[in-house]
Image 1 (cartoon, rainbow, N blue to C red):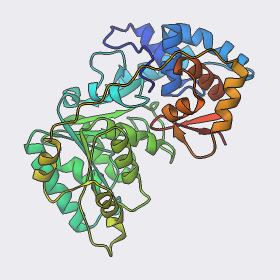
Image 2: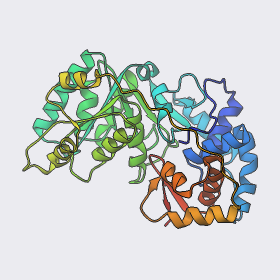
Image 3: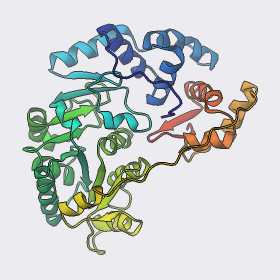
Length: 370
């Protein structure tokens, strides 16, 4: 998320405000980055909704309709009837650590103990087809971390995720779901799904009833990494969601850790590669605790950018498109390459996204659409 934007937080929201936040984030082609940009430019979700159809028309999108009030009202009332709570970024109960990630979720549906987000947390992720040794190792490390006062965050998948959640039920666990928070996925974890609701916390940024698809898991992974001080991988192939979570944690400047494994086991290949590339080698919970106890380096002050002359809008859009390709790049890098102030570039990004010419990816990444 561009830190130059003015984002509201710790402000009381009325039910009307919450419905408007739901309407805006559920509107077509409005992701977290566009949501916050619209909110910053127009002041409120209601005014952003009023402006959105004209923005779409200016971008050449015909017959654009925002998410309806009735649909938002139905989602809100159905969620509250199920005992769920809608947490908005502006709420004081929103997880503080999550505010500092790129493109934080504007809204979260939660069920369970919200106090868990206030405690230090470690994300534990790994292979779905976990080995017996990997499962035992996970249970031992997680149990010891829980006794040391850490909340365990994971993705409610089979294998390592499930082992981590089960081992942390007594001490505190948070499950970040890729689909709707009311959707049991995978079905094998139905009992665990209920246990976490009563003893831990489940949360999701996605609409109620949403069955997760492949594209939803990288989005979920950024929240897993964002809720934790460090991410520990216990078994994970080279190309796996676990390594995406580890990369998200690294991009956030959080600690990345891995349990080493046999070079002959493909489930250990990702962990061994992480260690080779600088991740902390973990043999026990104490290794995790010792690693995160290190003092954090102080960030260097960023020099002020000189004020540059305005550039015609069509030239800015053309420049943005010429610099993008099918491989996603960081928004901050794109802004530097364009060579103009962020305030002059970000409105064009919103327009190009609504036109369907560019696509946002988790972690503040941008690419040409299609």
